[in-house]
Every structure is written in C-alpha cells, then in structure tokens.
Image 1 (cartoon, rainbow, N blue to C red):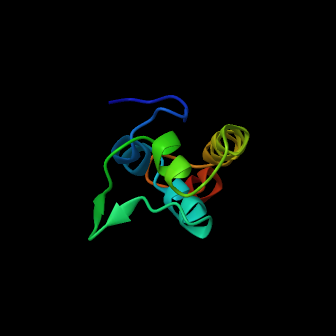
Image 2 (image 1 turned 90 degrees about the vertical axis):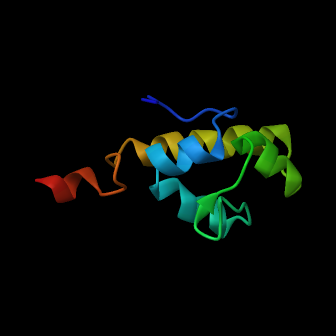
Length: 83
C-alpha cells in the first residue's frame, strides 16, 4: 500500500511500514506500535485513545507526524542523508 500522508485511521502496521521514523516519536509518548517485533493491531487513533489521548491531542500527533515524515524517506532515513 502506498500511503501519501499519515491520518488518524491509518493502521499501525501501515504506519510502521510506510513511516518507520514515527514509531520512536509515538513510543516516547507511550503509544506502543510494536510488540515482539510485530506491529500491534488497530489504528493510530485507537492506540492513542487507549493511552488516554483526546481527539485534539490525536490531531496534534497526526500533524506532528506528517510534518516530521516530510523530511524522511520510506526507510526512515533523512532525505538529506540520501544526497
């Protein structure tokens, strides 16, 4: 699946595959994306809600992830490292 941007209903599996750099950011906020090396089930919004994040906070997380992902390629490397 080729995903252009991150949205609240993206599955954790797609998020980890398409935007691997996002896993660390979410982990720092207590949102687990991987368990035993495999993506957890559900969407980004569901995982955030389970950790007590509000809808406003979920939107902020999505916005930050999209801003951060614009500087990375699909392997999680900085686009400046590609040059």
